Image (cartoon, rainbow, N blue to C red; front, side, top):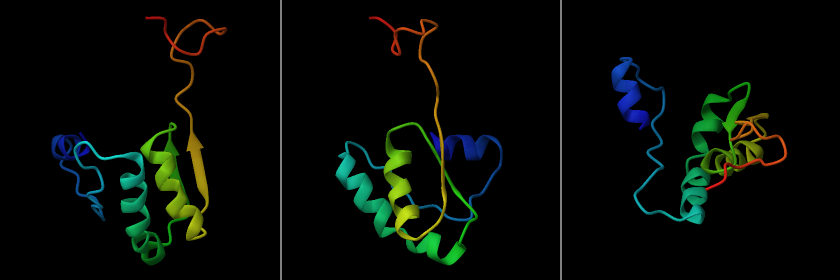
Length: 89
C-alpha cells in the first residue's frame, strides 16, 4: 500500500527497506527490520515514529538498538463504547 500512496503523491522516500513480503511471519519481519538498522545508523534521525502494535512497533526495536528515540502513536479506540476496546462481531 505504501508504494501505491507514494506514487499517488509523487513522493520518493530517502530509503526503501522493502521489508514487507507476502505471508511473512512476525519474526521474519523483525529480522528484516534489524537487518536494515544500518539506515538508522547512517541517517541518525531525531526520532523513529511508530504506530499501532504490529509491524511498526517491531521495527522500533531497530531504533532502540541504535539508540534512536522512539515515539509511539496509538490509533485509539476502535469503537465508540469506552467499556469495549474492540468492535463486536
